[in-house]
Amino acid sequence: MRKYDLLLKGGHLIDPSRQINSKLDLAFSDGKVIEVSTEIPKNNAKQVVDISDSFVTPGLIDLHTHVYWGGTSLGIEPDKYCLAGGLTTIVDTGSAGPGNFSGFRKHVIEKSSFRILAFLHISHAGIFAFSKNVMVGESENIKMMDPNSAKQVIRENQDLIVGVKVRLGKRTSGRNGMMPFKFALEVAEDCNLPIMAHIDDAPPSYSDLVKELRSGDILTHCFRPAPNSPVGKDSYILSEVLKARDRGVIFDVDPIFNNSEEWWENIPEDVRPRKDQPFYHLLAETPEPERSPYIAYVSEQNLVPEDRDEDPIDHPELDEFFEGVEDGRFILRQKSN
Image (cartoon, rainbow, N blue to C red):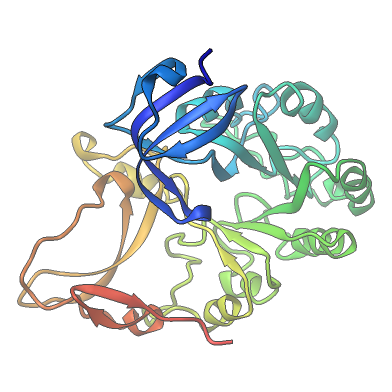
């Protein structure tokens, strides 16, 4: 009788929790990993698959998704997304609010084959109008902010809700400034949960928001472009941002495009990158002889290694992030305690 249902042969296993990074065989029975070894005989398994050209990892986690499919205009189908990305856990970041979280739970979360956790939006209806043709800021109407309803929903769904989401800025909260954040903070403190905050154009200012974030709170899409960016007019990172980092605020990157349509349309169509990919703000400099420093907004598809014999980049913000260069690599500066 064969010991295993499935044997994966020759894959490159990466498992940080066990400090594994090498070619190994994996044997499964009843859907669970039973053995990991450099060589497991093929005749011990009912099915053998050669994966020598593939990587094997534990189930991945996506910390920023919107999967209230059918309930919000930006939701995608969670199971299709997880299968395509090797994900076993995803976190929905504020698609649903107190008024529709029960529907999100019943019709999406409980029906999914994968683990879905969620940030509850402080707005009663969550992110309800986010599309190319219809864009309504869910934090514009203060009447949609009911902290008591949010607290009740969190208490009823403690197995799923891991934080409170709030979206701020000209396009999402209008002229309400920091008021939606204050409602979110009341709920987060009462329920002992972190806040995930989104910000677009002022008001409020980037500085006003980050100085209110607590240790463990998250600023998402943090590397947004000017105006209202983490960089001041002097091209240096705002002091409030550095202080927030040191006290434990988490800065989350742009999982998708987060710049203006004008900026987007100025790119020639034949080289215009897709929006559905991460974008990064890079410390860069112009070619010699000027080598003037600047900050570039670059899509992941256009990130390529630079092969040059010149000196390392010289940028006024390097010292904020790196301690120096060693063997051609920048050494990340450790945060002070």
